[in-house]
Length: 115
Length: 116
Image (cartoon, rainbow over all chains, first blue to last red; front, side, top):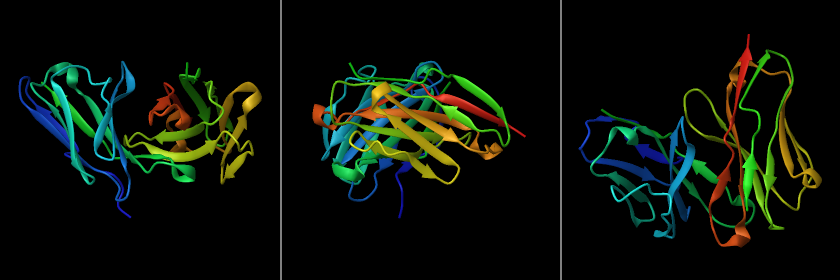
């Protein structure tokens, strides 16, 4: 079975450019999470969706960040404009809620470098 | 408030040694789940185990074992006869399904270095 798919795996861009990260959750999973990982701040939850609806975006650092989930099989995290401090690894995770299968599975991550 | 503490920032062992990674959690809920994830140098986060609060049985999977003790709010992870391939950052996490949130609370991770 395919796991969580993220693209691109690596992104290098210049300050001020728009960046779009993509995620395809595991089929049948109804929750999706976006995380950011840096050496300084560790693993941070940015936003999560349940049944395609954003539930909690309190971790989104500022208005430059936005996330959408137009359907159950696709989500995007957009940064516009990007800044060097956005450089990090961004993970997407999905989960099927409830019972003994309540576990988040992570994608391989997107390593973003903003010059 | 909910919290997960991994006090060991980094541990170095020599191959074939046993090593225990500590995880202490705080929660006010009676129903909760605990997790361990592995992040090898390649960067992905790999799910290792999930335990619910009603099941205090210890788990063994090959060289890996987990000791869940509610009395001390701990969920420790032991690797027996460590190997170089075990070198990774290991994260412990907590979720509280009755809180109405789907968030996981992650610890800060323990970096394990297994030396040949």
